[in-house]
Image (cartoon, rainbow, N blue to C red; front, top):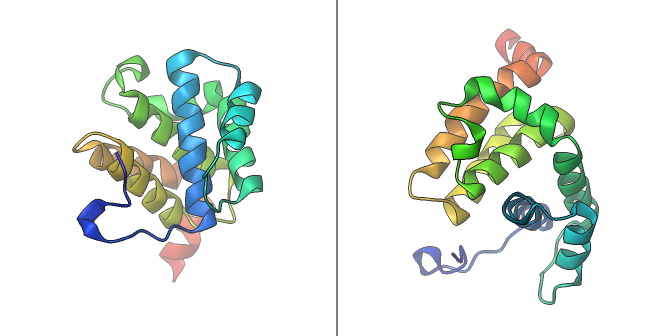
Length: 155
């Protein structure tokens, strides 16, 4: 499951990407164990060897995605080809994280949000999970980023 060994080259992850990986880990843990989000956050932050990560972004993504999960799930559902309960825990976590970031992290361009989600799905998900994640978030982005899409279409 290590992306670092992928293609034999070391990965130098940005602190923001690492924060997304850790938020994904927390959402995954919450989905599988139905644990308390504050406890999950503390547990992840207490781990050794986390590497450099953007602590503020990690907390924003984890807390935000989990506190707004019902609203985010409602946004995702029309774009899914199966019920949320049938998604793999990794696909669910990546989609929840990506949809949260599309809706709430407006300073990050939508293409960056989708690319980050696809990379997370490639690193941690099933064989073609990244294609599914890309397709769902690609359909959701114009809905959540209408202003950004409008500006792009005018140029």
